[in-house]
Amino acid sequence: MTFATLKTTVRAQVFPYGVPENLSAVINSYITEALVHLQKYVPCFQQLNVTKTDVLTGDTKNMEEYVRTSVVAAPDGVVNRLYTIDGDSANTNSSSKFDERHYKQKTFKDITEWIRGEEATDYLTVSTTAGASPSATDPTNVQVGTQATTDTEERALTGMWAKYRGKLYIAPRLINSESLVVEWTGFKKSWADGDTVDGDDPEVQRAVKLYVTKEHARDWDHDSESYNFATAEFNDAVSEMIWECNQKEVIGKQIYPDQGRPN
Image (cartoon, rainbow, N blue to C red; front, side, top):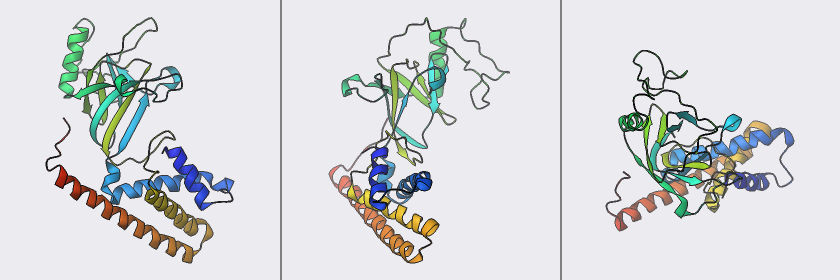
């Protein structure tokens, strides 16, 4: 289920006669808060995060670019897998598994060495005094790069990535028709309408619905009885989800004693 579908479903459950127009944005923020809250207490919900970023260009540009590398903000957690897919005209993930190009994790030193080898010293000037870009957090030995409209590059079959100072550096750089997909474990605090959530699980829907109900009862209805009832029900729902998550972990260890770690 997408985040947009979850919002539509929960809003219809809590407000069967329609959400008050002046509270539409508020209700959406409650739904986001509910998902963040569930992640804090139910570890299973920290493990299913997927972030998809389209490359795009011009005013819709989603990625920074440095000489032959693409740069995006790193997720707040551990990256489990990073790959690229072909984007279609609607910028949606319509590619099959055969279109995925998987990238290996390397150190940032490996990225800079690759840049030097790819561009050669005539194209990459290493500066030890001046900043490489307006952002002070960017390393000094990576110079700002631009791609002319006459450039023609083929999509790379594979590549490397590294996490450095809160950013992901991907080499070779992605072309305009690609999208970057990052699967990661950690705390996700914002969702785009097209992002996948666990809304198909009726327990998740129920927990989000109860969270929205209790917050609305407290902030707008000022109904302490409804608030207390919804809060108790919400806490019970979260407790059940925590128990189920722990059971999955126990069963997983029994079947797969050594789950290993991603490379």
